[in-house]
Image (tube, rainbow, N blue to C red; front, side, top):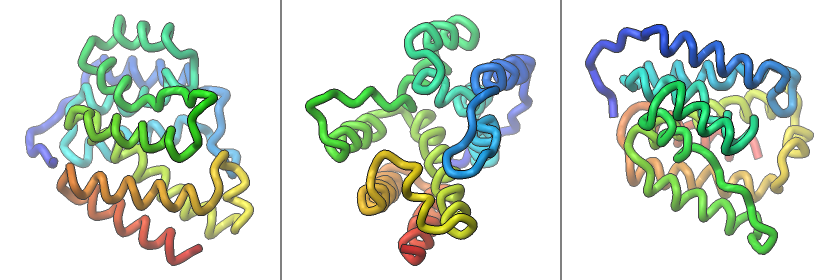
Length: 193
């Protein structure tokens, strides 16, 4: 997945960072009171370190914006401000709402299928997102302990199942150091449970 070309970030990236900060300013991460913007920043960093483009890095900054900060109006604003490529990546990153008839696991299977059908650019951003999330989960388990699991809608077993399913999916569709690290982090997660 790594692209060896040099990416020079433009004012579009600076604008996207400011916009992401505006959107997530009052949001905190789960478990510990950490400013949420740290997560999109980390995801963008991982994308850039993996050779991602500026559009991918902008999408990384905004990957949770539609899901967490306003739905369709935010999607349209992203399309207007950053173009169809960024909007498409963000859309592929956005977990669709769970219907009343779906179990948690069926909802996640639908999302796994969505990831599988996503563009390589979106898959890179999703992988970076999930890698940062599993790193954070491990840190929280080490610092806070088992009570970490109470911050999530799904059970500990369901969360572990999802991380293993994601690792399998990434290994079957992508290559590179992030894929390897994601599997390593999932193995660490398993060793802590």
